[in-house]
Amino acid sequence: MSRNEQNATAVEETSGAAQANDLIVAPIPVLIRRLAVPASVGFFFNTMYNVVDTYWAGRFSTDALAALSLTFPVFFMLLSLGSGFSTGATALIGNALGSGDRREAARTASQGLVLSLLLSLVVMGVGYLAAPSLFRLLGATDEYLSICLEYMHVILAGSLVVLPFYMLNGVLNSQGDMRTFRDYLIFATVLNIGLDPWFMYGGFGLPAMGVRGIAVATVLVQFGGLVFLLYRARRTGLLYRSEGAHWTPDRRVLRAIFGQGLPASLNMMTVALGIFVITYFLSEFGQQTVAAYGVATRIEQIILLPTIGLNVAVLTLAAQNGGAGLFARVRTCIRKSLFYGAIITVIGSVAMFLAAEPMMRLFSKDEAVVQIGAHYLRIAAFIEYAYVIMFVNTSALQGLKKPAFALWIGLYRQLLAPASLFYLATRVWDFGLNGIWYGVFGITWTAAVVAVVYAQRVVGRLDRESVAGGVSDPAAGPIAEREGTGSP
Image 1 (tube, rainbow, N blue to C red):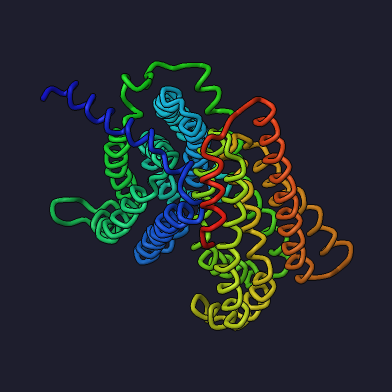
Image 2 (tube, helix red, strand yellow; image 1 turned 90 degrees about the horizontal axis):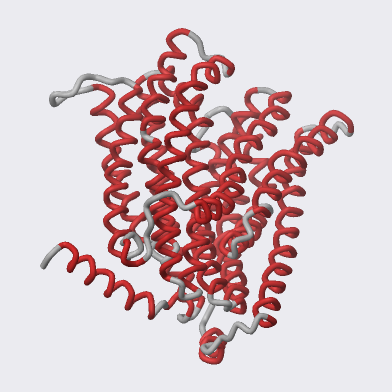
């Protein structure tokens, strides 16, 4: 069989699968579990991958560990671009598939990869020019600066891998494939345990590379992931020209992906701003307070980790069902995800409240750090569900091609509200450290309430517009029946 015949066969198989698209037919509770569980497992191993890097850097030298910390904001911006534009592509491809326009989905998938390569070149150029000045601004000099640049130059070169890698994951996520990324992350984490020390210390024919070896290991593992994800994405058929893929830049499609991806990327970047703002105010209370907050937020992330898969599931299901005009299913998806999120966070929050001090002692032996962090965790136990509410609703909006809200709520939650409220709490009202802790509580919950109200209004408006436009739903009866009988 010729290559063209093999490609045609693969496309026929995937086209048949697309016609039986169960993401707009199967019961929502079943779909959420099917999508969210592998996504959550994947995010767990993604966290473990970073833990491995941190562990080996700390074993190598204090300068190496500090270099990883100092370069993280720059690396995080690269990840924000990759993840943000992947989110935008997921929404557009999912909407096209949900509406039955497979050729538009293929065109978007291919143009997403084109855009990721163009962005990679821009990131590399700007990064190489700006990195030395940026690290000097952050206090790096002499040998410390040299180590930071050794690590960062490799990572910047790897942007040619990172951004297309995330875009391919968006292509897969849009079709409900969360297992490929999960499988890659499990394998990558295990592989990284061996590659980090090998590349750092050398051996078996390789010279010792020091902290540069950690970066080389990261890029090498991601290149392997790129090949694996490309193989799986090609099997869907969306990257074939016969399906509608187009490999020369298309301004219309590139503009659409950019419009969806940029707000999502900027929203992620606000996290870095938020860390800076709260650290600025916490530093007035001493180094132990800053350390306590750093440890406590890591514990929070672990508690919330099982809920992250819900965000990915909601994004995909909202995109596909919104594209199909099935907005009742979008509402059901939001409601069920919040229900599952409530169960998970109640269990985690109770554990966090009751075991705050033992959890802190796993990370620090400083009693002051333990007590400060434990006090925050007991307050944070009543905040965790607000994060779930906020993230589920913003993911639904992104899936419905309404990405701007995530950026605005991110700016409010990470920058505008903290800067003003923390200033008043500590400089004007003299509430002390509790002013910051309860400020986080108030800011997060108000953001969550706003997210719920806004998402409900947007879904309702889109539903009314769909009905007014004459969009029919021939499967509404069976779907409604399944949703009514499906267990939560």
